[in-house]
Image (tube, rainbow, N blue to C red; front, top):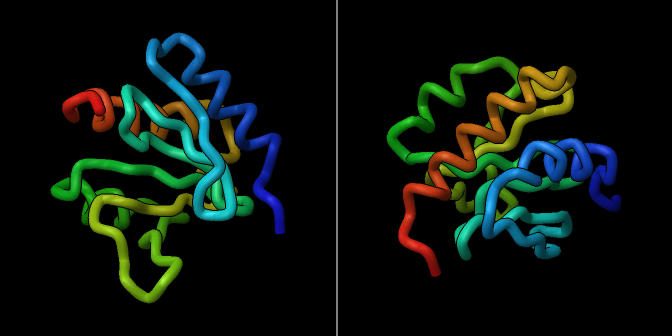
Amino acid sequence: MAFDETLAARIRKRLVRCAGVTEKKMFGGLAFILNGNMCCGVHKREMIVRLDPEKMAAALAEPHTRVFDLSGRPMKGWILVKPAGIANDEALGRWVRLAADHAASLPPK
C-alpha cells in the first residue's frame, strides 16, 4: 500500500513556514526532515511523529496512537497516529507542532 498523499499534503501545508524542511521517502512512506533530523511523516494512512522520548508515555495515552514498530523493535520516541487522531486540522497541527518542536531542539545534521 502506498502512503496517503492527502495526509502528506496536509502535513506539508503545516510545515511550509519552517525553514530547513526537506522530504525523503522512508519506511515505505514519506518523511519530513527538519535541519537534517526526522520530524514527522506518513506511513500508509498513519502519521509518524518523532518526539522527545520522555513525552512518549503521555503521547501514547492519547487516543488513536500506538508505538512505531515496523520490525519487532519499537523505536524510542516515535509513535504512529491513526487517521481518527488527525481527522481535523487542529489535531493534525498539534502533532506536527510537537514533532517540529522536538526536531528543532536537536543539533542540525
